[in-house]
Length: 192
Ligand code: ATP
Image (cartoon, rainbow, N blue to C red; front, side):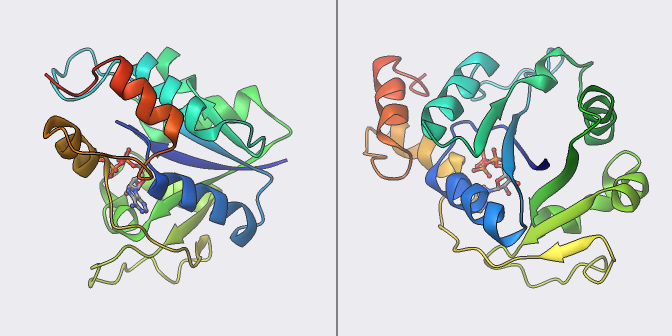
């Protein structure tokens, strides 16, 4: 089973994330994409970051009955802060028969050299990279044997943009699936 890991805080998940995950399945030849919801860092007070439970719940709702996508809370139980290289080692131990790869925007590839043990990640895992709008700097890792680019339609939205709209009492309908919109409205999330 080939699993693509898509890491993020998903605060909240939005249609841009879903399009990337669904496109990556075909373009990267994956069987599943796992949304790796980042845990709350107990040492970091971030007012706008919703509890991990709410963010996971919204990813589950966004995925709905798409059985090629999965919301993962694996990092919630790992030491914090969670480093990708440690999460990958944990997954390797736990799911010996699966092959894991990473899905990331080109912007992330540009900063990869700052990640803990990034050389080990690059050597051992395929990285499926999609272009981000406005990215003019080319990554020096572009031609690495484990870096594979794929085309994906990009939506010019971010979780920050959704949060700003919610705070301004504007609609986020269609920017994230209806059940997520309802969950946010019912819980009055992101308002304070
Ligand atoms: P924030 O605005 O809070 O920083 P975000 O929308 O960028 O959040 P993350 O949870 O950080 O969301 O997203 C996980 C991954 O998805 C990141 O690697 C991010 O670059 C990427 N991503 C976010 N928005 C889009 C988008 N519209 N299209 C493609 N990729 C996106």
